[in-house]
Amino acid sequence: MTTAPAPAAVTDAASAPPDPRRWLALAVVMTASFMDLVDVTIVNIAIPELRRDIGASFTAIQWITAGYALAFAAGLITGGRLGDIYGRRRIFLLGMGGFTLASVLCGVAADPEMLVAARLLQGAGGALMVPQVLAIIHVTFPAHERGKVFGMFGAVIGLAAVSGPLIGALLTQWNLFGLEWRPIFLVNLPVGIVGLFLGRRFISESRSPHALRLDLVGVALATLGLVMLLYPLTRGRELGWPLWGHLCMAGSVVVFLGFIAHERAKTRRDGSPLVELSLFRVKSFAAGIGVSLTFGVVTGIFFLVWTMYMQLGLGWSALRAGLTGVPFSLAVSAAAAVSVQKLVPRFGRKVLQAGALAMIAGLLLYIWEADHFGTAISSWQMAFPLVVMGIGMGLIVAPLTDAVLSDVPREHSGSASGLINTTQQVGVALGLGLVSVVFFGELDGDLAPGAGGRPVTPDAVGQAFAHAFTHALGWVAGILGLVFVLVYALPAKARTAGEAAGAGDAAEKRDGATADAAEVPDGAAGVRDGDAEVTAGKEAALTG
Image 1 (tube, rainbow, N blue to C red):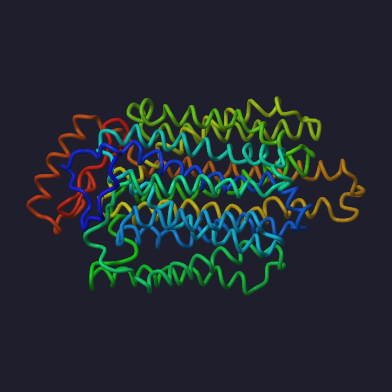
Image 2 (cartoon, rainbow, N blue to C red; image 1 turned 45 degrees about the vertical axis):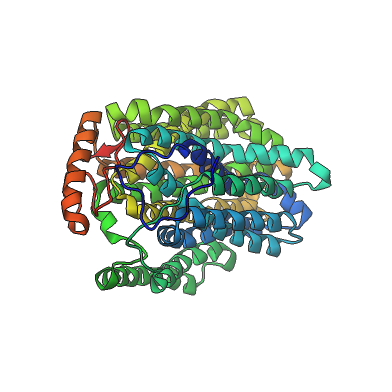
């Protein structure tokens, strides 16, 4: 089989036949996504070993998790734009190589500081790799196949979210070659090498014809704003919430406003901004971004506090904690697989709202069980609320991705993908930062000497973790209520196959005549520029 064609100056036209190697390319990019998503959660399961082996404090643990999310979020917009400019396959392979190398550095880290630094580098590699995944899918698959593809992508997301702890538990339990927790990172080496070889062979190159140069000022402003927001939030509890932290977070708003003003001026000046602000004229994209940000906060809080509750609070082994998450993982994958193709075409955004309500119901049941059974709670007692929560998450993750990207012009798919992943990761980083408030704050109060008149015994520690856990879950349930409300801003109905095809024909005729002058009209598919197309899938796209 021949290698992928040389980089093209222009993204394939909408009328070009589908790439016959697209399913092999999909396998490569989904493997990369799985590897990245697993590494977000796989560290959680090794927390006791990290504390014991290299003396990682709670603050260091928070930085090992949040540092990755911070570097990831700060670089995602830039990573997406680099793919638009220099080629998505090229930047994908560069990011995968950097991610693999950083994983090796994580695996050989001798102290918490080195591990934190390696995780920052790993996040930066992921920021180059991950935005290209959705962009490559977007430009590789025809519209009528994307519903199925995004359903598969959602299933991978759900599977990876909880498979990370299980894989980490097995690798830690086996203690391969006496390396204890280190194989959870070193396993990325063979996967990364194979991915680099297959990616070079099967992924076709694509890029935007209009992204002429990298907006360095935009990169600096976006990165500065994100760091000013997330760094004080992550370190606030450790430093006693100093005044400079609050001022820094408030100042991030000014920086973001400056970023928007700069991007508008850059668009007028040379048409090559870091972020295509015109994307926010597309209703499905703008609304989906808000939902993605809020849902990211949910996942950021839940997965970290859940793992610490089971291992440090209940004293369970890594393997038991990982196996406890299997029902959740299966439920997420099953629900994600059917939501896009079967449910969204019929019920539209109600599917996402049903998912939010299901997750809230599962959380409330979990809170009741944790309070009722205390430290005697068992894995099988957790299974039902986890299944309910998993079904809810599966109903959200797959349709949300397709809803956000459905009407995005293909030449801006890299920038759009970077924005989607950035908002998700900013949400995750915000959630991880909020762990200091909603979990550690409660834990510190309960474990303070003489708190409540109780001695700090192992049973008191377990009860303190259980109380902090249920308190955090209450916050998660409240944030999911906000997700439910925000989904109302998404398009209500699913587009039928006939409507999608008719809109596609009309868009092609219009764009062939107007090229760069075409704009996204209200109530129509989001299409502009000569090589753009309607990207709503026959079965999955949402429209207003």
